[in-house]
Length: 110
Image (cartoon, rainbow, N blue to C red; front, side):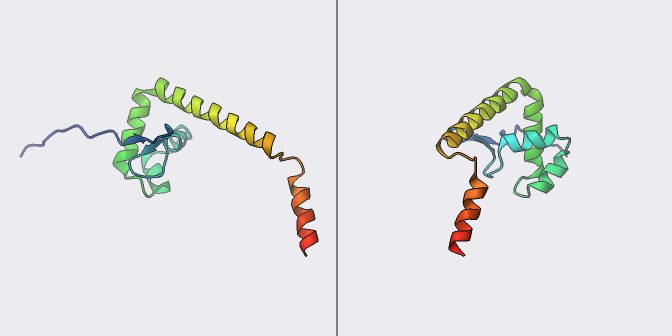
């Protein structure tokens, strides 16, 4: 009996905006790497995200370990972009006094 060895394709897919997801799921590379950095085992990650097959979780973790500098740079760029978007939204829609405005609106309707 022999085993046929073949390379499996990496289950990472970048969308039009550059967001990297695992396979055909909505789970992002960011999510899997964050869970791994938090100390979760591959089995725990797959349990938390049932749409992720365990083999894909292991493949993503392996890719992260082998390409840590590139993935960390990608994650840092995503974090920077998220901060920019958050700041732009806060300039447009000030979060200051939101609770008071909502309570006032609720009181005027009730």
